[in-house]
Every structure is written in structure tokens, then in C-alpha cells.
Length: 497
Image (cartoon, rainbow, N blue to C red):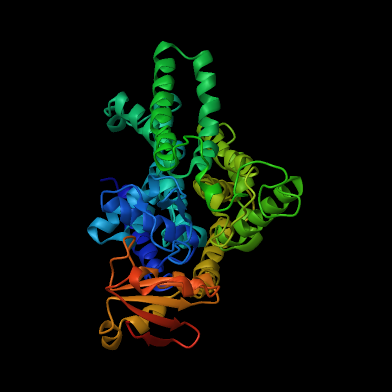
């Protein structure tokens, strides 16, 4: 293995360990946001060989965030792609390792991309920046779907460049049959659509436009390849329509709207929670807040995170591959203007798949400026020293402080489970626990002790409006009724009648 590849492999492995450290020590291998609870719930159902569950008795009490009850069945509102991947973690007991392993794979694929469109030096600097990025590490430690979608986006990009742009592909890569690259490109885009549909449109947009150009100007072989890739992607993506039909009987049903009716794509009244609905003001507001979050979390350099990108653009001005890659963040920004949400908790995660081009351009800009210094009267070490200082500031100051802000997120932590892990509590099982909660997080933090089939020793009914009075002991004859008060951690036993 060439020396540069060995270094890249080492950085990839270190990225896996760093991401797992974040998962273990920052997030405690516990879901914190609604999306994660829904993904894990659906992954458990998939791992059991099912696609959905029958709705439980009292579905409003046995609530799981973003898991929908519709026509007597229960399912996640999200597309099936990511939960299917997570189900492998459920089956192997390695759920917390899935995203860290994908993060390491994303680092390696980014290195290969940097090699392909620049050189070894740029590629190694790129993945060093990526592996140290607060944005990258925060997302890689979660149970969210972005690491998987980044891997799929990179696989699509690499296959597409080999097929249609790069004429100087190394000899060992030219040995890979063309049909394999075609399948990788088509499957990556199709599976991305089954994972994050709106992201797939944003990422796929520049490839779609380039594909139209190739259909117009290319020879018969190129046209055939473009059409096959499009056909594979469309065939795989159409599984989402089948999924919606299986769950609701309506192939066009927006599953998101089954949880919140206003959770739709588009503009106007009734879309989103903003006064007057989603419109131009909120498009600009969301974009500005996302860019501000991105400037902080991309490299941890504050507004200086964008410092080298203009120079990278200049250095790569004649590189056709870069022109295509720039279309990825541009497509994501354009597409997500139609969505009313602007989540910046983990950084601007709707634009996460654009992190690769940001790292590539930053690396190219650093190296280009360094070369210019050699040709001028400035000291040769000016730019490298500046870059080292910025990276050191991130690693020593910004990154630790930013990670600390993610601890105990939404007051969800493993300590919430402690009252139910004692021998005294175990002696009360099997039990139905009425959780007298003030916030949904007080109930959600207990869900790791409960499975979708409500067959675990403890099952939890979330009573935020005193509706638990409707529960009858006859509905759970084999279980004790327990009342739990999270504020005081008091467990009160109700005698069985």
C-alpha cells in the first residue's frame, strides 16, 4: 500500500475511534432527539423480521417520538433506508458502532476523492480537516442517518467521476469493470432516496444536470450508461412509494404529515409552524442561521472557517470535477429552501453531505496560498503556521467546549434509567410504569428499557395530561401498576386488585 494510503487508513481508523468516543462519552449511546428514537424503534422492528406493529392499547400513552399510529398499525414516519442499516446493529449488538464505522469509511472515500481530483497532499490535508471537524464528529456520534447518506453521496461521486469525467484514472481502478461502477452510482443514489429523499434530490441535482448534458453530447455508450444509472436509481427509489402503500394504502401519502399535518414541503399557509406559513422571510432566516452555525462548527474557527475556500476555488478553477462537486452543497441549499425546518443543533446538518467539498476546497486553498508564499517575499511558513494555529485552536479550545454543550442533551441521559436498574425495582417486574412527566424527554429517556412489542420487564405509559386514569388493570393482568415521578424519582406501587 502506498505511503499516503497508509496514512489515510490510519486517519480513517482514528476517525472511527473518535466518533465512537463521542457516542460513548458525549451521547452515552442513547437517543436524544425524536429522529433517533424513531429510527431505533423501526430498526428493532426490522431486526425482528417485521415492517410495522399493531398499535398498542392506549397508543397516546405508549408514545414513541415520531412513530405514527395509523389505521391500527404503528410505524416510523421516516423512509426505511437508515433503519434497515441500523437493524444490522440491533442484530449484532453493535448499534453504537454503525455510525462511527461509516464515519471512518467516509474519511477513506474522501481521501480517494481528493486523490482523484487533486493529489495525495491535498487528499491527506482534506481528511485531516474532516476528521477534526466539530460538525463531522458531532454527527458521527449520533444515531442519525447523515453518516450513511455521506457515504452514499461519496460512492456516487467517485463512480460518476470514473465513468464520465476522469480520463487519468489509475491503472488499478481501470481494471474495475464498468458495470460495477454503473451499479454503484445507481444504487447509491437510489438508496440515498430511501434514506433521505430531499437530500437525494439536492445531491443528485448536479449529476442530473450533467447527465442531461451527456445525453445531449455523449456517444451511445455514455448515453446508455447514464440511462442505466438513472433507471437503477429510480427503481430503488420507487420502493418508497411501495413502502407508503404498504403502510397506509396510499402510495402518495406523506408519512411526515401523519405526525404533524403541517410537516410538508413547499411554501404558504399551513406549511410549518411559522406565522403565515413558510415563505421568503423564513427561507432567508433559515439560510442565515445555518450559515452561521456552519461557520462555527465546520472547522471550529468561527468566521475564519470560510477563509481558505475562495483560494481553493481559484486553485481549482479549471478542474471540471470540482465544478460538479460544488453543485452538491448548492443543490442541498436550493432544495432545503422548500423545507420549513432549519436544524442547527449538530451544525447545519441538512447540508452535511456538502462537508466534503468544503474540506477539499479549504485544503486546496491552504496549499495554493503556501505555494504563492514561496514565490513572494512572505516567509514560506506563513500559511502552514496559520493553518496549524487554527487547527490547534479547534482541537484545544473550540472542540472540547462544543462537545460539552452536547452532553445531557434535552436532559436525556443514562442516569434516567437508574431507578429501574436496582434489585428492588427488578422485584416489581413485570410492571406497567405510569410516568407522571412534565416533558416528553422524561418519558423518552426511559425508552431504552422498552421494546416495540411491550414485552420487556418494564413498559412505560407517558402521562403528561392525567390521562392514565383510563388504563384498566384488566388490560395488563400480568403486570403490576407502578407510578413513577421523574422529578423526585419516586416509585409508588399500586396493588393488584
